[in-house]
Length: 327
Image 1 (cartoon, one colour):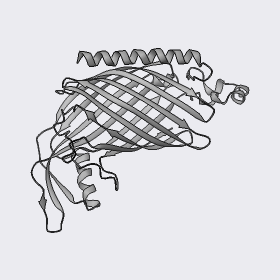
Image 2: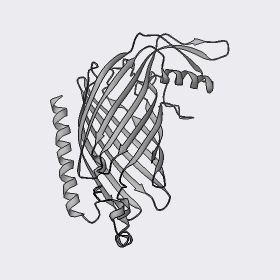
Image 3: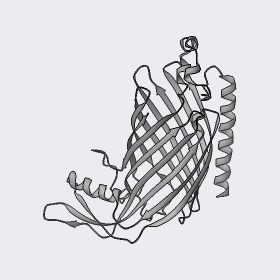
Image 4: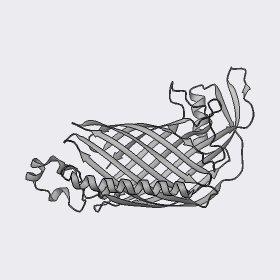
């Protein structure tokens, strides 16, 4: 545990030093957005001379994000509908004129495990009796990342629920989706008891940089280290996140490609979750995209049924699709 913690801290310090040196050596291309300067205060002559000034954000705006998770997408049958298999999220935020982001985030994921062998029905489909845990997390988050400074800070307080009852939005979604597509496996959930509620607190510090190659092409990167504490047993962790992205937007349409890894250090070991993502940008306010995430290493299983694929022995790839809209 101590060795893993030192690796995380040393990596964070190294990136901080690198980012600071890059900002000094490439000051003409590194963009630090200062929201204290409003777009209305930028003279037209500056906008014409340097199009980068158009990136200065407005006084304040709102943002809403929605999305779903699944370990099987269309003909991509990489998952077995067990373990972490379904989920959805709803995030809403207001970003102030000072670049402070206040967010409300609701996330729900379903974890399942077979309770007994499946039973073949007369119509050729299978009934599967399964154990479930629905994890619901609702939290309020404050972040300074929108200020565009080299260092940013994030803090959150929230509520976490582990529900083994076999009912709720994600369990119903799985059941109804299987009926809709006439999946070979129809689910029957075991009532495992009453939900357990916990308190959640998070804090993090991050380093970010943005390098503009030209007016249409930007490179972005950030590293973040933080802690997550929950009163739920075995649900606390030390977290390290890193992401790099390339964004190309020559006109109304554009795209963003990203890759990163989220690492959790906890009592029983270390979990790595590398991911790749692709987003389509529509104007200045809308984006929709997909992401594929692969959980590796040791498994956090306070949900009880965060289990690997029964055939491969590995955690399934989780596919996410979502959209974000600014107002």
